[in-house]
Image (cartoon, rainbow, N blue to C red; front, side, top):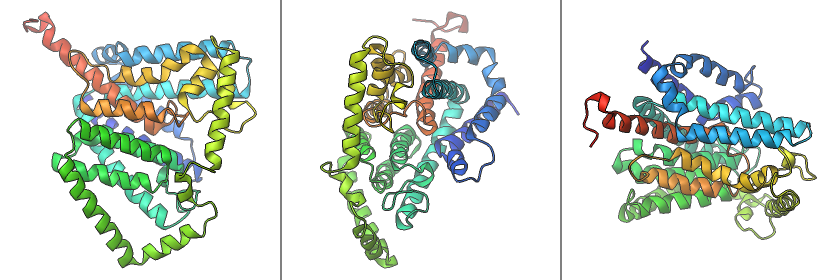
Length: 397
């Protein structure tokens, strides 16, 4: 198999295995005898010819994203050195290194025009499968999600499911024919809504607004498809007899899932507020260096900050607050030109999701999408160099 053929296959396999979250789901349910990290190692071994290829290696290592990874590890490493060694600090260090390593690996795998096309096509299929599985999960409580009335599919956690679907939709929209893009976005919205994740629903709305603002989607077609989907959904549910059954199930749940869409009186909202205040206190006590790597994993609360900005601020100090937005900015950096519409929408939802999740730099479905945009930047950099390099026989002017 040629290097190009190997890269295309690895791109398809990597996207399917890690964006879908199937490996972690199988591991959590006891159906996978080895941890998902073993498959990351297998992908790394298979991708070694790509990583060790001279031209491709330097293109990736000189990319803005690689520079960000180096800075992230350096700042995190200093925070770890300044932290007393503990279970929390070791867990945070391992997660940081694993996330950064996986991101770089996927960049090597995806840093090719053909591999990017295949990966986007795979994401389209996986997003649609995720929507279908979420609908099944909602109609068959506890089939995948541990929360009755909230779908999660293979992602197990409804919030992660919603975030993954939104990011996957934005990253793969280019691979969908223009006439189907509105339907694709709306179908994804259905899959996100049934998770009842406030984070995901807001993120999908922001993505939709961005796509309309940039002209990718047309208002007239949008309204037509929305009306068609609502009518089709109601008719289908009524015909299958599931509409009444679903309403009955949801109505019997105390403090039910629909109530979480109202922020008042919700336990989750109170917890998020409490940990946010604690994170700010930790930062105030250590504004320059932070409280140390893993500090938000070992405080008196059972959960971390639910916020990337606060987590990095509390653990790494003032410099930590620029790390998270810096990841998207470096992934989207393009020479000689504006970031494409999908990239601008991705930046908006990336910054938004950081306000509601503290695992954005660890979850592999999320990192797969980030790597796709970063690899696109690598390909763009290579194309510009070929066009302007006098050695290629092209007039640089």
